[in-house]
Image (cartoon, rainbow, N blue to C red; front, side):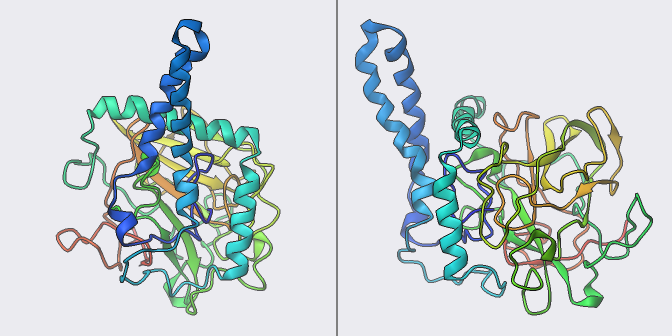
Length: 357
């Protein structure tokens, strides 16, 4: 998770609160960066050289990065994650510094360009009428992708640790929601309705000690579970977990997702579970999984400022070509909602407890 979303950023954001106000109501400038692709023929054919001027539009792809450094204008709504003890000036400085340095990482840069390029077929596919909570009807019943404290580790038979409400620790949505104001990454279409989860204690802390090591975080190494029945279409393991946490991004990351699992649940519904712990991925491409089955463990791999689970559902199996989909969970035992007509949409700031299957 990072403090600001850039074109070379996975869009994750423990530190990125949803800024309200004037800037949040303006059309998203990021889409102007797509005009930059018109410059490509100018570099291939001398007769089309004037088209090279369109390359300047690629600068709009930096808007999510710049946006993270700007103050809120005209916003008077409180941040729903204020009660979570994440951030502070030093955390923000580390996050922003590492984010800027990360733009020099060629793997991350290429993946950022691919994310922007993937917007073109997505916008054409939907003819500009992108899925939203009013237009999208999900075909799958999803559960929260983790245990409730009473669940068992499929490998050892031990109970999931640290997630039971009885010990004061619960999974918490730190980033994301069904609206633009709460969106995980509105500018990045695949992750528009993504959610980031951490575990918090009664004081809103996400870790013990000083939080400088991944293993100090409550959610680190917690079992992660399939949100619904399906077939694994992609699984990646072997990416290291970032050696530092507390705001630092891994400058040597090779993939912004880190270790991840992609599951097909229905036609046009693919879930992504990312930033898993290295060596924990328990499934492989082609495996059929059942709802609640352990697929890995929460980690700190890829573009992550501290251990967390990144989860989203999109309409294509390819991370770069998919459109994010707003989904509801049927097993949330205690969570307020931004949508009074359907209390199963969840968003940033909510503690969420899965009902037992």
